[in-house]
Image (cartoon, rainbow, N blue to C red; front, side, top):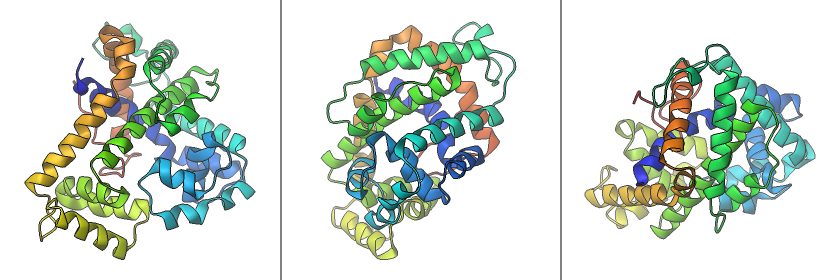
Length: 305
């Protein structure tokens, strides 16, 4: 099993997780729980597995945000909402978003694997996918993966759709922690990582999306650009050099390799089955327009396979 498997599983799992950052149902759940404003809700719900932490923990583990942006939300947000309430709101909102986007109805479990059936969320398919994704977590090594470990320590929801979303969230944070380690090994900080990856997306349009979404100032962005030029990773026009492309490819390959544990644990047949179940839902989310492209996660639209 090679890194391509881990990348495919990220491509089908990430859109399902990501509704929590983009869907109005998620925002409504946060506000109903006592938090208004997107970024306060984002930092509260994503950091909640750690408890009522301050900005330093989030800056270290989320890795890619400008410190000033984190400090505007934390620790003040804990005066508005407790971590336990934030956790409940994020699961409730994500499940409501998935039901609104994908809907109930025909069940893709009726299709013989690895074929995929309709996109609708059928109960038998959701239960099967939740069980498979939950089993995959057993192959995740928590060493050096703080955000994964905090999420994995949470009790899974009993509702099958909420359980599926939770398991995919745990798996994506496992991958994300590994990605951060690969960036650190490559000598890239948060701003540099976004600048380099964004310059390779959508004709360079991805850089501006990432800068705004992660709160980097013009001066911070200019300084990061200068550092990448000094390393010959960007040229004078801001385009990615051959060395920059090679370093980015190396980081992505290391990320994929480090994310293989859960899929080796699940095994080829069951991994393929989970991919087949998730793919039509991920495509439905992409077609809905709820998750924008390009986006700060670097996630492309899911294509048929």
